[in-house]
Length: 324
Image (cartoon, rainbow, N blue to C red; front, side, top):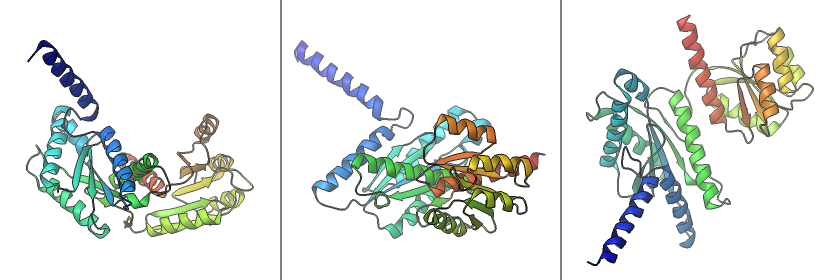
């Protein structure tokens, strides 16, 4: 081999190595989320060329007890746990599945050509394999969430469909993590808890309120709908609610003013308050913070996100009461 050939080969290997560092997770040696996004994009583009409806799930798995492992042992042991999780998943995957390292203690599995009715069964198989594995220094469980590509808008570009797919997956895994360990969520999942609480929705849009009422009632909340801020204020003086969700521009009294009045004169002064806005701006954030509003959600509303906020607050407040 000539000196030119040797240098050429060395240069190619160096460039490949540098490229790999961008798309391969150093700890687990799995392709990372950057590679995953490009993979999903290319899959959608390829589906167009063969005039075929894409059939793909992404299944997110997230270690439930990684914080306890980091505290009880060390972050090094935590990293080793995440690495070993990848090994367990690799032993489980089929020829139609691809595993990607996701953020923190999470993985995403791309599952091709799986009937929709089988996704829960497949997720259970992965969760049970992890739960029963003796690979880890102590047993772990993983929360799981699945989204099918058909849940995204087919009129969007492939890049935007990928973003939408991942966004839905993030919302679902965040919600799953608020629930008992080893929980699974997909589009058909109803969070089955009895008597979770009362929600007051302040909005004059009948479509929005119908969707909100249906979603929260399916998830075991009692929902009261009012069309304007004045009615909301009056009812809040006599009836206790666990959560108030109000549109920024509620009729007769805007939501921020409503919250300020509730702070002064209502049994709901400590109720979780969620503000719905069309666009979030610094001015709105500052006003909301000053009024003591807990969360700001932009439209279009993803109700799974709001439910995640509510469950998180319930956990936080229950823990506080226990410590007191």
